[in-house]
Image (tube, rainbow, N blue to C red; front, side, top):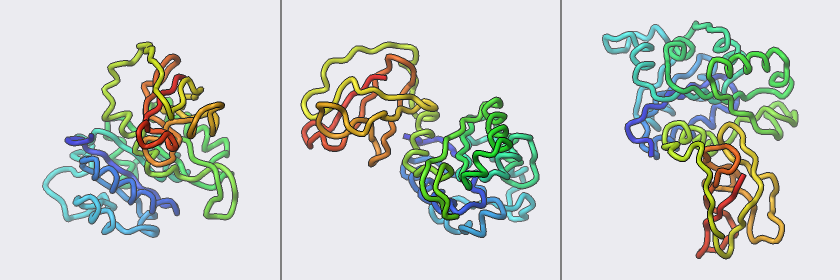
Length: 265
């Protein structure tokens, strides 16, 4: 699905850095060329060798690395990148990117990129909810970044709340939305018939950042789960977004003969 596309994966210094390895692997399986840049602090949690083995590309950390071709490395990489995703993104890196600071390989390269950019903040709940962090995220949105909301749950610090990096399967959905969906039905209204036995139709969904999330865990009177889970149990679907859109995907519990369900916003 991503053949011929280059994804730049930025990994910063948080405990969730290990999930970035799963994300890199998933993108390679979709035939993307994955270039990884680690911050210095990220190397305290995961090594460049891990990403080099997963992607087949050299993992970059140091802007002044002498082991390079005769090109300005960060400019060359920026020019061939189709999408940037920073996951996990610490509060520090969010602040740097929001204010145009470019003091390492990651921030310097991103500043030169003109492609779509995604960022997935992951940090302590109090840090995430701090008005300064929220202002920085709003600035990033203003400059065209798509901010992927963190998940809620128990954090590595022991706190319970919002701040977890979403699972790699969900991050892949955001990337596919940007690079793989043709968007040829944008602005169109589709009327569909019944999806057949074993699936739930006309289930209310709510859109967030172009993805569809199920409002309820079970649909009244239906079989299986309400919602759209193309990858495992993420509860999220690729969608063109907007009222009247139709989402289609696999619904666990629908039975082997009828695994596909359709849902309206």
